[in-house]
Length: 220
Image: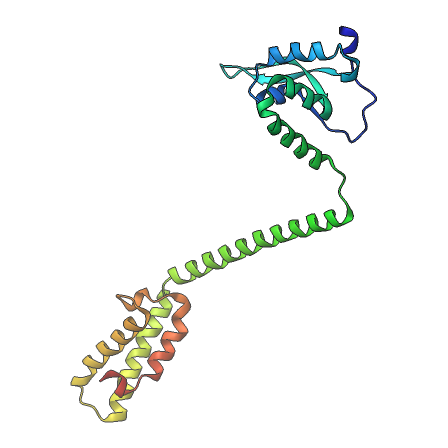
């Protein structure tokens, strides 16, 4: 019996092989029982040679240990699967086909398609990163309010505009206080803030332009 349990050196280079341990896990069969089934099958010349190897498993307490198993060809795997659990044989065949497709040499077209898919994936990742970066930049830009210098400049600009309107329209001094309040309210309403000091730093030029362009009609 042991004479048949040896490394098979006659396999085609690209022929898939699967361990008995993977098969027993796949079709829910006790591994030791399966090992005995394979040993019996090796007595038949038509079954061919098999290779006995060690594989790692995780036991109940989380420890890892080595156990003996067999490395089987596609044909041998199907024969063993039929013996062990015929009702789940198709599950094993599906797994073998999956391994076969992974092992199949890729054509030039396959490589081109694969390369294009990889490039598309990278492009999608890059676009997401760029969108996220823009989002962060916009958030930072909008979250930073006017600097002290900008606030000072804006206050001076408002004062200048109030007195400009007074001189232009020959207004009484009593109108100045109301015009100050109305200009600040116009700025707060425009930028949707509770105080002019909350205006984003990036909107400073826009705020200055609004003040400069305010007419008396805008304040009525």
